[in-house]
Amino acid sequence: MADYSGGCLCGAIHYEIEGQPDERMQITCHCRDCQQITGAGHARSMGVRNDLVRWSGEPSVFQIQHEKSVVDTAFCGACGSPLYKRSSNMPDLIFFHVGSLDPESGCNWRPAMTVYTDRRQPWDELPALEVNQQ
Ligand SMILES: [Zn+2]
Ligand SMILES: [Zn+2]
Image 1 (cartoon, rainbow, N blue to C red):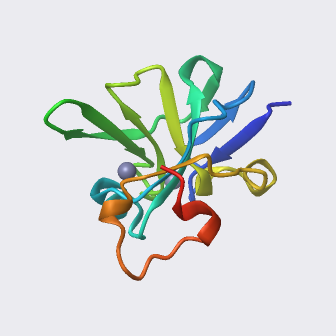
Image 2: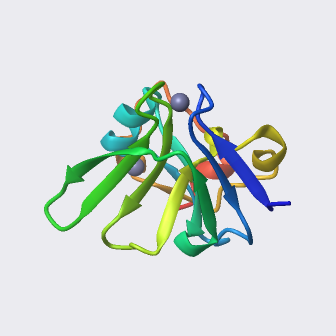
């Protein structure tokens, strides 16, 4: 049995993770990309090494060109559920959107780092414990 599993809304894409995520790379991100990818105020993600992941179904990928990096944002081509992001700065890590994890897999997720707080929308408050992490 896999340590973690998840997938998209329509069920066309499913993934399994054998092994543990990178403890430091449990990120809450308020950047503009994440706002548009999620349609919410921030993204919560779990960084996992590529080689620990097995896919069934193939995510669609859109590439976001930044000045110094390219970010892949992956989603289901059928239902549009966001699945992960991957940056050319850290090509060995997949940052899964935590909401795509099956509930029994995602329930123990804890944020380790909050980034791009300067882009945070005024209506998107985080619990006080999290605000000072950067
Ligand atoms: Zn789908
Ligand atoms: Zn972001």
